Length: 324
Image (cartoon, rainbow, N blue to C red; front, side):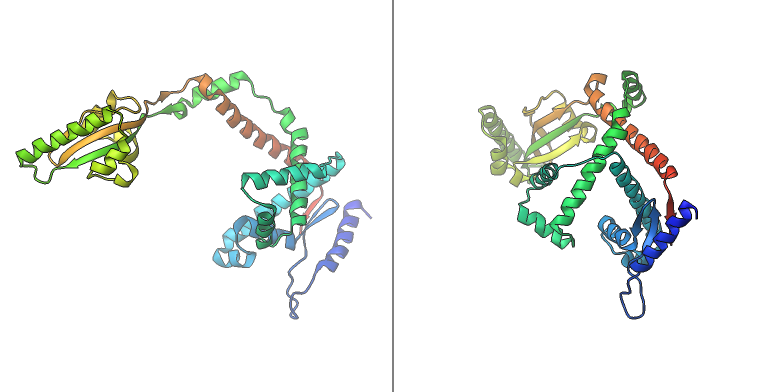
């Protein structure tokens, strides 16, 4: 009997023991859906992973959109097959991850997410997972990372010429338009035709400017005197592209630096006192400024390509049979 025929025969026998009826009518909730060399992918694994990745059970996803369900199921099954192949390669290369490394990885997860051990266990329980299962998953993931480091990452080389070529081809990505963060005190004029009110408002604006020059806090003055928006946040208007400002406001902030206050803008409805909280003039970033960012982008791209080629090669050499 040929090796592949024998494998199929053995796994079909095993699969027969994995058909477990959920109800008296014989509905199946678990069975073998793929054979991968000397391992199998079960329907339970497939459905569990589908729920983890989509947030929906397979039946709910199927009812929502059957075409999407079938495509999602196909992609996740392929992912599980690749994981089984990777696990076999890990065993072949005798890659080992020590318990203390798993502990350190879990502690990092807890620290990064501000979780106590009790919080983590409770969160896992909500997802239907025990802490022991979680440890096993982390161990497997660390082994896969180490495998990728050995087989893929160590072979990736990025030359200086590639970085420069990418920079020249994507210069528009490294150019930024000017932005300005503004705050404002607005003094409202009730009657635009009232000359006396207009004079009083200008005098008030002058007094506020003097207070600002004397070092008083702009935000506190806005809360005390402004009739405009964002009073509760000290008149903070947020960040704007310079091109979004009207002509008069753009002219006012043009020559101001971060922290400076412009001359009052007098309009028919009142007076605006503008502060430039922060200013970015924009412009093109130099190659040296973005070199590390480009390197990271190219590295991720090459890593994806190298991993895809590597796993594809392993897949072609493996015995894989999908049973649906």
